[in-house]
Length: 543
Image (cartoon, rainbow, N blue to C red; front, side):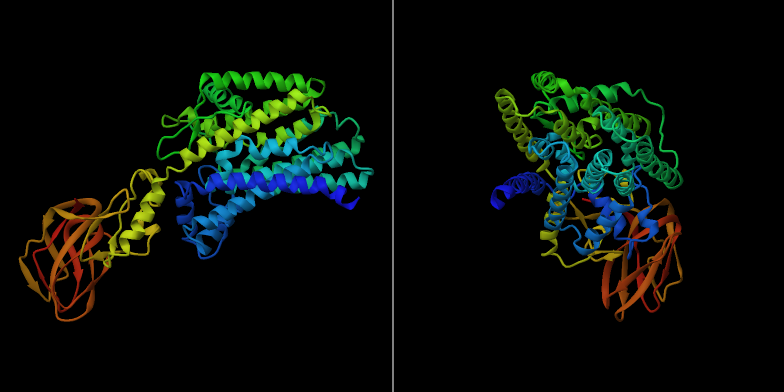
């Protein structure tokens, strides 16, 4: 009898492990990408995860919990992809286990868990680290919040109901530490309980306590968000395209296991690009699901309505001339729908399941795996991996320091400045080098030439004056100085335009060194006692 009792648990554990392994295999095809890099760079600026870091908004997100994960990875395993994949696997496992626990009072079926684990809805958020550190804890928190709410409605005593209500509110607050979308939990959880007919059986006092337990943390974190981030709204935008793209091209195909096809604009994550046939299949699958669950179809109301909230938030906070509506088709902003759908399935699926429904479910699983394979193929195209792996290989054969420079556009755009600078990702960057190089998009080191813009007026000086006049003015920007010098010994000097001085190591003998300085003006300021200088140039590096 004991073995028989354990069988459902073993089956659940096996399904959970298989689902996580599939997601981990997809994640392993990728690498650190865009926001991953900028988050790591910011985290590495802090020796400890202080409040300055934890309360730093990122693209309008307030995410102290996510910052803590990023800080840990950035300091313990910087740019270590196996460590990141392990973290993703743990996050997926925790979220899946939370979903399984959430709907247990409604059903012991494994189908809702399978739907959560394999839906294409969660592909981006379960494989892209920067999205996962926000969203996987959010999924777990929503599942726990909803599961605790379910148990509060079925508690045998008011005291027990109050405990579950407090846990529901606490998990909402925990989810808010990772994403402000937890502010949507209270209405969607209460609506789900209402549509499943579970609130009606509660005592009025217990129902009020549960509602209060969800609303108060929402108001509390809403106030914290407003103080830390302020008003995130941009220029007003028409939300209708966000709704049509998000529902029609993003969510609808996933009902049939789509989209099967993903597009990608570098630098950017894959986004669903379904063909018309897949959209029609999704509509047909939605109708079939509604027919199958028609007796309890009310459970689908919160599932259908929830995406309106994040899509509207996108229209308010992320709209602008450079915003593409395809942002909704990445699905990462509405992936919590997968948690709600799992609970709705647990409540509404008939038992036993008709044979034709089992066949359709198997077809959906195969279709979802096709979408996962297509996503993995797109996700495997990682310019940042090519760049950093190529750079590591090149630096093994190169001993000189590198001058700081922008990363290739395929890796990070200038809008991320200063975190698009090489110095944030390599300890080989210095302010001066005897051999200037430009790092290519593949990480290769290419010899660089100085394109001279200005030069020192004096042809040669020993025991030089603190100022060297230039033959013309320079605008304020970053420059490279080719300093030609003779030094009798190992020493250091400082060099500057009208900006901050930089330290320059000087070798004994006759040498040229290339020094990176910022500023402008009509003179070079130098402090190098005992060093002789000949004509030196100021310009920019090029191939």
